[in-house]
Image (cartoon, rainbow, N blue to C red):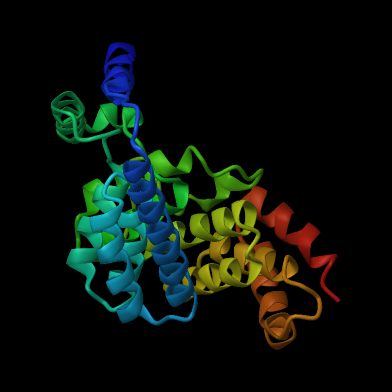
Length: 271
């Protein structure tokens, strides 16, 4: 595996450097400006849930900046927002398993990784959020074995003291698609709330997890967990206070000792 990682690094270093003319520098500067403009426009369109516009921006961005996995990640977001699940899955796949460049060596190594799931730690994920969203799309298209593999990879990047609780199923795999998908939503909530500090969006993920597995202690706990991290002045916090308290009480009544203890502590902080 170390040899494979070294090959990937060397493939990425296989770039020829040239002294650019003023005209070439001007073209590169214009291209960079276009990349920045498209990235800003695509991000803004996604934020406003204008997925059609976002798709157009990111499709152009893929043409202008084909070597950036983030371009494919944004395209995946835009496609998923329109319900184009198969296309979104393909875009996420490109973003998650992306070679350093298009040299023959890098492409060959990337294809080798694709065919050997145990080597995927040597590939180049955008970040854990992209991995989790990719896992969710795979599950929604019934590619369950692949979804679980991707989820397991991404879980290594979920840094939360209570993360042992977010597995709703045994080590052998999920008991049902809804249980698996709820676990992915919880992981997304932890990642988005922790890495991106977007607590409103994180709460939305916990809410989706609860809807998928309303009787699971862990989903009830994380619903309350997410609620407590909202801004006290947030309208979402005020509107869901009773539901958060009820969810934590339900989690506290579970037979899972770690969740029971965490829920009891969380309840003490609920007004």
